[in-house]
Image (cartoon, rainbow, N blue to C red; front, side, top):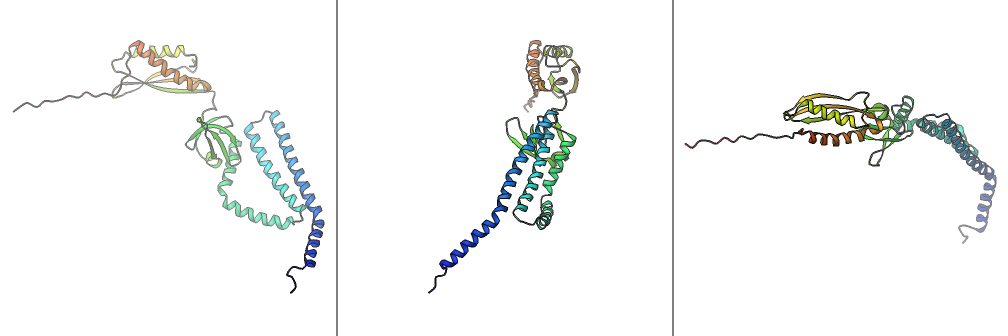
Length: 280
């Protein structure tokens, strides 16, 4: 019985394989060369553009976004060039790629919305890298604005990725855009307190704290006559970097000032009256 795979057949397959590899080798080598050169050119392009934009002192947010967009465009062009070197007809491939692009675009409408949102953020600049923002129920410092999302680091060092589409269409509270910040502090004093003495104690604390700005001038107003106390609204201004420390120090200093002046800080209390029924 004749073997299933004769020695002659194996030799034929090997020779055919070697012949095809020899014929295909120039295309494969040229494709590898184009791929390596293309990767090097993309890296060189990123370095040159980054240096030029840095020297012109452009916004780092814009720099990162532009580099990401151009990098992906060049990668797609490099991919098409490499497969063309391999002998794949790019006309039919581009047609198939276009049809696939439409299908992918319909499936990834959210991603396209995020990409458009990223463009809006770059153009209108509601925030920049390094700003402390509050949006989508989260708060933190903007670390980077990427093509589809914004990377935010919270105060407890957690990383949050916020979709650019939601950010561009939602409400954003930017704490870093203005150089000065105002704080409204509510203080409660008892009804028996001398309001003139209370205001003198508050202004004394304000005068001694160098972090509290004198312009815009601080203000003290009666906010409400509450059930158990008189509520005062104290408005203070500070530089953005000193805002948190100013508020903390003010609470500490005002407690000490009130205690020294004999001003009471009331707490909720109730008077209970017991009525004793007469014996019959």
